[in-house]
Image 1 (spheres, rainbow, N blue to C red):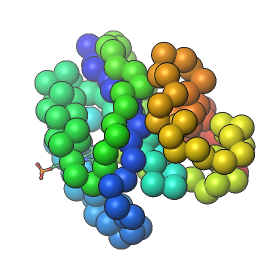
Image 2 (cartoon, protein in one colour):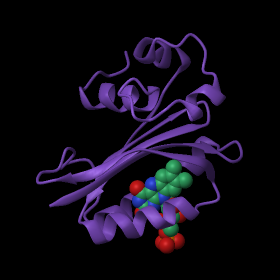
Image 3 (cartoon, rainbow, N blue to C red):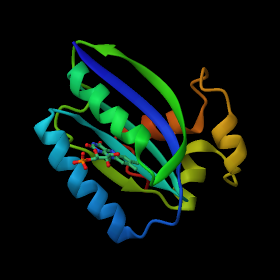
Image 4 (cartoon, rainbow, N blue to C red):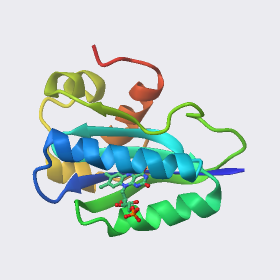
Length: 142
Ligand SMILES: Cc1cc2nc3c(=O)[nH]c(=O)nc-3n(C[C@H](O)[C@H](O)[C@H](O)COP(=O)(O)O)c2cc1C
């Protein structure tokens, strides 16, 4: 059985493309070691991530993610178990979304941050879930 977790969060300060690349480099190395796969989307300072792997490692990595001062207002979207991986080949796929792509996927004309973060997560209409789903379906945000 594999455990999976997805969440949205907000950057604490403006992160340059270079610091995101550093974060990815480090995360991918650790994920390889811990057999974790998944994806990360970044849009206007908002992260949406899904990751999966052996329970012990997923919980360990999740604890360090929750403690990471580069982001805040972490809202868990979903967590659970699966007997197969959703992203077996993806060490940590990354995509930075443009505003146009965000609007196309979520239907939101403007990102109202407060609404984005306080919207109930019980619904599949949460914009974070929609972003993850479109990533999964191989929609290349064209
Ligand atoms: C948005 C975001 C996503 C992250 N994703 C991962 C990840 O998938 N895997 C990982 O090991 N660390 C990830 N990190 C980094 C961890 O929070 C933490 O900095 C890192 O695991 C600590 O590594 P260290 O113990 O080697 O210093 C992420 C951090 C942020 C801010």
